[in-house]
Length: 132
Image 1 (cartoon, rainbow, N blue to C red):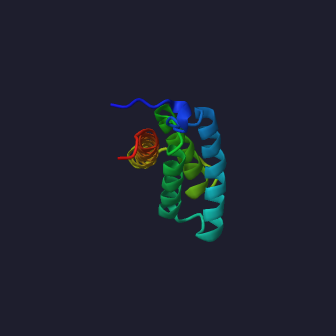
Image 2 (image 1 turned 90 degrees about the horizontal axis):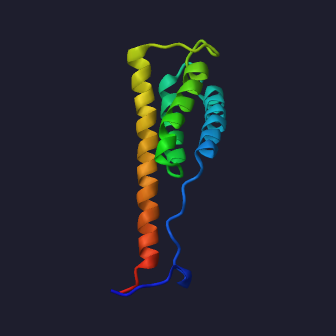
């Protein structure tokens, strides 16, 4: 076994972003995304909105801590429910459908978080491990 100092050019695993920053990104990104999809596909296309918000949740999850996942899902769902489903500006709650939608968004954010952590850990491991 050979020990290498971290100051010898190797860097540790990058820290995830702070949770409030990720949630701010979720609010801004969801608002812009839902508004853009409403302009392109129209407000009557919930599957397009849900797919786009799931991708956003996964991308935000790649730089987030695990504790930020529920907030990402809730914030994306709020914009989806308020502006992605007609009538616009009205929050509704249908337990069976909305729990599935929130679960999908939470699953996307969780998947993004896990993928981001694994990628960062593998990259850091390769930086620290000496070549053979």
